[in-house]
Length: 221
Image (cartoon, rainbow, N blue to C red; front, top):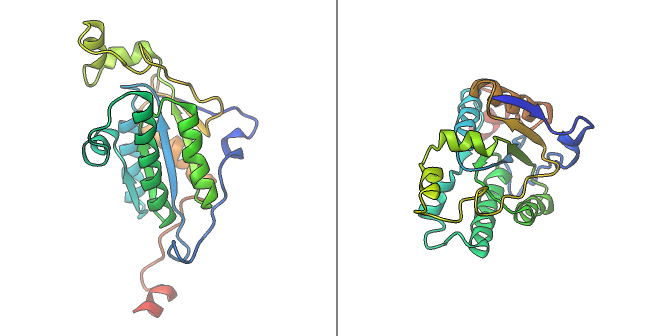
């Protein structure tokens, strides 16, 4: 996976809300964030999200992955793939992600979210609540995605079995200024995951877990 930062003019941090702690909603000294990984089907979003989540968990951070397929099964069952339903699905995921992030969880969201206004609405929700939010564009070319074809969607679309495949016969609005842009060909998943973890750490979004026997723990014992 080749990794490239968003435009080198500081855009990687310009849209991110600084960490803010709300005593009613967050544990003391705990910073959460939502990391939304948008990109085409088979771009590598879920693989990258799970790799980052494993790295963070190994370091003692609270993390969750909101997988798009699981959300469709358990939270958005009954929704289709028309634009209105896609928007509804994205907003539902955004609500859950912001709620978790506001309580100190680093939430990885590998969901296509093809429309820019939908993604902007999710960012706005986070901004209103002072919850950090990053948009990561997993910028794998459609030709590479079609070769991977993890779920067989590209083959089925080519055979005329399905329609409305994002990036082929349904729109995908490429993020103009993501907080990070990652190309998932040319380097490894581990390298891309480390790039994303480094960005989170550099923004102060990875608060170290308190050591065992810390003052806070003793006071609450």
